[in-house]
Amino acid sequence: MLKIPNKFASPLIILLLISVSAVAGEKLNVVTTLTDFADIAKQIGGDKVEAFAIAKGYQDPHFVDPKPSYIIKLQKADLFVHGGMDLESGWVPPLLEGARNANILPGAKGHVDASKGVHLLEVPSGDPAQLRAQGDIHIYGNPHYWLDPVRGKQIAENICAALSRLQPQNEAYFKSNLEAFTKKIDAKVAEWQALMQPYNGVKIVAFHNSWPYFDERFGFDIVAFIEPKPGIPPTPKHLAAVIDQMNQIGVKVIIVEPYYSKDPCNLVASKTGAKVLELATAVDGAPEVKSYLDVFDYNLKKLIAAFQQIAEAGNNGK
Ligand SMILES: [Zn+2]
Image (cartoon, rainbow, N blue to C red; front, side, top):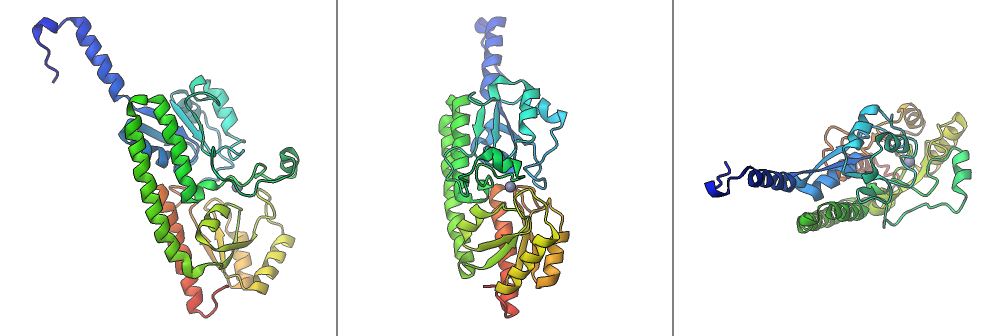
């Protein structure tokens, strides 16, 4: 209990002390589009933040229902973190419009586009509007960059800079958390790359083009997609071409995101003898995936187990 000598115990001073302690103990309210950004915000913000992710880890980040309850979350937010690159273009604009919170709009202190400073892949030379008209949903390049843990360090830096802008008094704390997070990632990446080294260049097929950053970091090779284009559902003609290609070059693994139908993958698997693996694209994408680092632990463990089984069967898919 706060003890104040009698001579200072005027109501004004008591009020002042209470309000100072309230400000010092106030947590920043962080709302993110993805669970990965929320986990990174918690790693950097520690006990100075509360973080809430709108898209669940088992939901397609391109398509989320913009529920009114999310507008209420955004109304109270001090910081909003999104993936940018048009990833959430179908659902973030109506939520921000509904929330009318000037503190989290583009250009404000409380707005973070997590892609800032990230080295992007598959940036098309064509006109984005034309690509969109053709049904492509990766019109500014591949937006799934958080699936590379090294790029995750840049996301963490972006979040750290924003938290420091909002609470300059805690800047040293955020920076020391960023340093610890960066070190943890560096150590884990070395460990993961060593585990994946024997499978360098193994060819696989994926449902959606979520994996170029993951693929680049861990050295396997995605040769085809079940979707003809990002966002376009598979057609029988396209699946037949994928089956032919897989049989010609001996591809034995198909990876699929939690939110897509497994039917086309199972059909292709039945014609090629491939295994279908559901991988997590975000925190909470599988029950075991509780943190950003778990995403990689979980996916690589699953891939390595499949590659080992295939190698043992005398058909390593290379
Ligand atoms: Zn995508």
